[in-house]
Length: 136
Image (cartoon, rainbow, N blue to C red; front, side, top):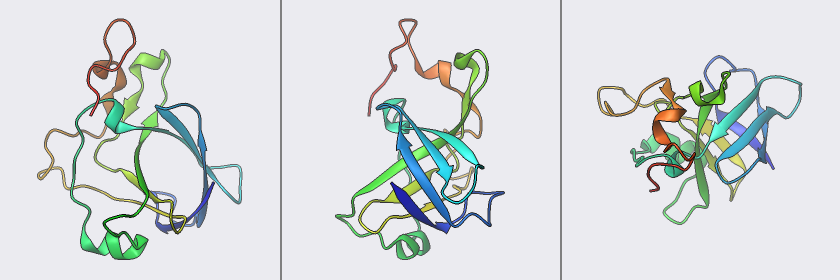
């Protein structure tokens, strides 16, 4: 599904359209709709941990978010080898509005959300049997 970028992903301000593709319940792929790059692996944070933040009014207006909007929140993951050492950025969620096909990255203030890190190792959220340690 394609989305219009209303608030760009940091470092990729010129990208105006992105395509979201589901890999499984935990992972998704986000690709530039008009070029070969960038390509991001995204993760569903709610399957890893308790994850809650306030969406500022400016972002709500930009994405036309309402109380009943069909939205999805994902986080960018940096893939490493081995996969268990891959990291997740919980301080810059990507928000998707499925009702109007818009998206944007929100940068959270670290002092307001001290429990969230820029590069948290994904293995810290899984048991030894590879199941998430906590589901929200």
